[in-house]
Length: 432
View 1 (spheres, one colour):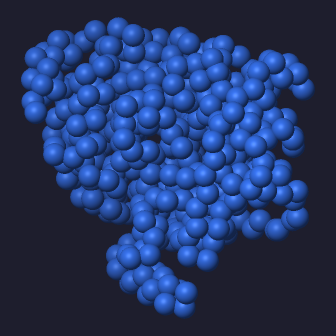
View 2 (spheres, one colour; view 1 turned 180 degrees about the vertical axis):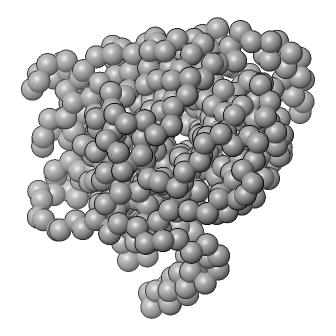
C-alpha cells in the first residue's frame, strides 16, 4: 500500500512539472462539510437519456443492501410505476465507493413532469422529459470543477429554461482524489436530478495510474451514458436523439484513427442518421479542433485529421468542445479555413474549474475565429425549428439574461452541401 502512495505522489509531481501553461488564480474551491447521513439515503442523484422515451436514474448509497429500484409517477407522492435497475461499485487505491445504482424508467411521455423516489426511501425528486419536437433548448458548459465559479455557472444555468444539459468533458476535477467525485455529485444534484445531463470524458476523468489503476474507472462507474442503446461498445462515445436532433458524443481520450473501434462506430452511427427525422446534427468532444488560444495548441489535430472529413461529408452543424478554459466561436469552418458547408465550432471549457482561465490568444486572430473571450460562463442553444437555432453565451460576470455573444445559426438541412457531399459520404461509409 505504501508503494501505491509513493507512485501516486511521483505521478502528480510529474504532471505538475510538465505543465507549460501558467494560469491565473481562480476562485476558491468549494468546501463540503461532512455530515452524517442515513446509509440508505440516495445521494448524487442524476439522470440521463437512455433511448427513445426512457431515462436512466443514477444515484449512490452507502448501504450495500439498498435496492436499485425507482418508483415514479406524474403526481407527487403517487407512484404508478416502478423499475428495477442494477448496481456497481469500485475501489481506487485506499478508496471504496458506495453502491452506485442505475435504473432505466419508461416509456415516458414527452414534455412531462415526473416525480420519483430512489431505493424506496429518501426525498422525492422531479424531472421533466424533453419535448418530442422543436423548439428545444440545450444548456452547454464544460470543464466544471467545484469552485466559486462553478457555483456561479450552475446558478445561471438554473435560471435557463433548458431541456437537456450537454457537458463536453472535465466534470469533477477529482484528479485521483475520489472523494471529490462524491462532492461533485452532491454539488450538481439539484440540476442533474431534474434535467438529463449528457456528458463525455475529458483528460481529468482519465485518472490512470500505471500498473495500479485503469483509466476512467470512476467516470464509467458513476456516469453511465446510453452507449449500449446507440450500439457503441464503450461508454466513452455514443449518440442520442431528441426532438429532431442527432447528437454524437465522441471520446478525445480513446483511439479515434481510421482503424479504431470508435471510428468504425462513428461510420455506422452516421449511416443511420436520417436528416428528415433529425435535421440537426451536433457533435461534442473534449479537445477543440479549432482553437486560437495559446493553451492546448494542436492537441486536437490528430483527431481532426481522422474524423473531420467524415463529419464534414455528413453535414455536421455545430461541434462543441472544452479543454481550453475560455470561450471561442468560429464561422462555419473546414480544413483550416471558413467553409459554408463546414461546422460551427464552439469552445466552451469555461464552466468553473480550479485551474483558472486561459487568457492568452494568438495574434493575429484567424479568419475563421469570430468571437473569443477568456471568461467563465455557459451557453444556451435553442433550436427553434428544422432550419434555425439561436446560440447565446452568458458570461458569469453578467446576469444570465445578458448575452455576451449571440448568433442565429442555420442548419445544413436541405442545403446544397448535403446534396453535394452525399456521394462522398456514401463512399466513405462503405469503405472497409
